[in-house]
Length: 168
Image (tube, rainbow, N blue to C red; front, top):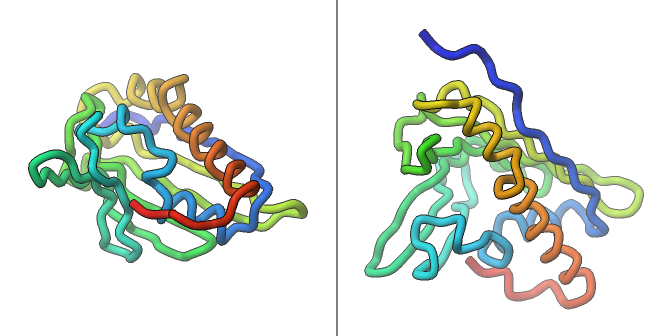
């Protein structure tokens, strides 16, 4: 029997850049803000990225040719929306079975002075193990709040410097 629905993690950021630029930093510029400590490769991380199409993977490349897929793109609508299956188990191991994955949806909407990013991470009850503890971890200090603070810092720096160098 499956666990009852667990409340999603929802984060919203108002950004002083247009939606297209915010989307580009989130996707093409993932390496500029995603911490290597939050990967399986750690300090050996060579690249991290998102393949820009439905069916593409969110992946990392590490030492000795290691490639780990940690997400699967289920919605790709630049510059408005990105949706992917979160293929990381509650125990932080790869979870290749999408039936045991949660979902992350990131939207970018224009506002008067830039754009608004809304991230919703839902479906924790589908993960094996303690979905409620996993949700708490992703909502906690070392989860999405930390990741999005790093993302915001890169966006702010980009408002002060040219939009270049967004490589994975």
